[in-house]
Length: 348
Image (cartoon, rainbow, N blue to C red; front, side, top):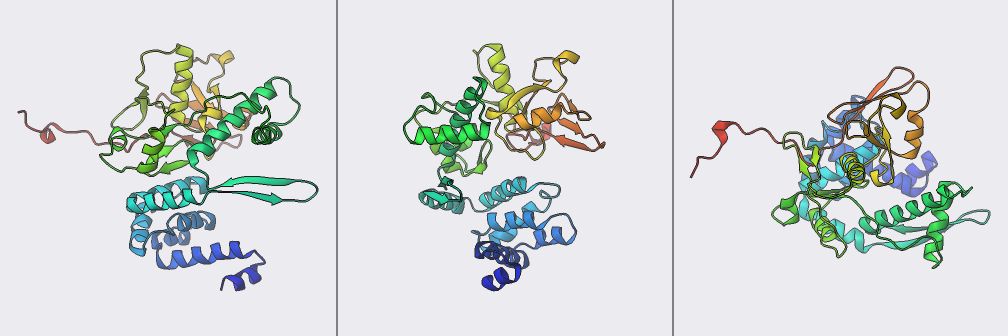
């Protein structure tokens, strides 16, 4: 069947196989996702992300994950759908997620693809997410430093050149320790539960992998205080840091990624910008600063675009055509209901 689909649609076998497996999953294991498509609330690309993220589950677990996702997919882009579906799959079968993670990480490999006219590509496939993220952060930082020094090459060209120089033992960048943001509750860190953790820019990862990353020799743990009712960041729980450095770190921890809806560039690689421009009365504080990648930072300054940041961190973007889009920092944990006096345990 795969080859027939490939011939009929004039696509390669891999693409055809993905189409066939998605169709089979939708008609046998993912009735809620199929229902969203029937109502015009989900496109084919999003459905394919759900099918791929739940492919390793049993039929019963796939239906459970499908039900969990029914109210979480409408209005999301494909990357948001991928993260939500992966989280649901890991929540439904946590032991399976651990085994799948171990299997995938064992399959890491380096590939070279030769192109036309003297170019080729080198890629680390299925590398450990924490190492790949840290490597990209270091390469990006070096590229930006070279650009600030007057380089005429584009940032994309500089990133590629820095990466190749480092691989060849050249002076692509100075030795330094790069960081990734890993969000994990204390109980999971202590092994008291198996709630998935989140790696900024990537999405949810199994608790076992999160503990492995957090227990590394260069790991730095930081207490983050959240509002128990909303899950939003209130404080980083530190005693020392220059206010300017601490302010920038708070904003990046709070935002995690570029705040334009649909952009997932990790906050460490983003600019910190005033939602209200400084020259028009903006303030350098947590109520006005926000993380934007360079592209969206520039877009903000284009005529007709309006950005409003509320006290709770909700960003409202108004486009030149008058459309409104909201972006709220994702909570670090699910909101917890307030405890009524009747539910409190009796005193000893």
